[in-house]
Structures are given as C-alpha cells and as structure tokens.
Length: 61
Image 1 (cartoon, one colour):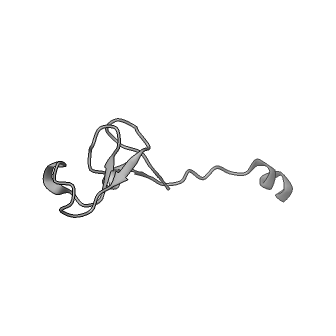
Image 2 (tube, one colour):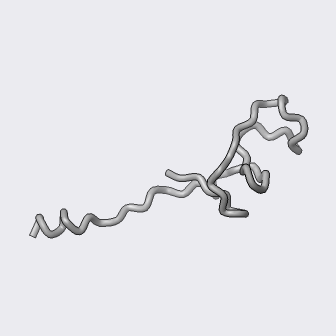
C-alpha cells in the first residue's frame, strides 16, 4: 500500500496530534500532505499493484 496525495501527487506526508497544531485549519488529527497541506483521506491510498510473475508461469507449463 502506498500513500500519494490525490491533489499534487506528492508521496511525502506528516502526522499531527489533536489540538496541538493550531496553525493548521480545522485542527485535523491525522496525516497531511507535506507539499500542499491537504488532509489525506482514502482517495490518497493506492493498493499494491499485482503483476504476474513471468518466470512462475513458465515453470508451471
């Protein structure tokens, strides 16, 4: 599983604690994009890509 911002495409992010970072709007508790500052959500999670192993298919034949 990879995390990539759906707005700017950055893979860097940081976490915040509740009511500690008052400079961030809405005081969101969780992960933010390090480049654009958008709170990360489920749209930013990318499931792993499964590719067939060419050598495994040749051995099976």
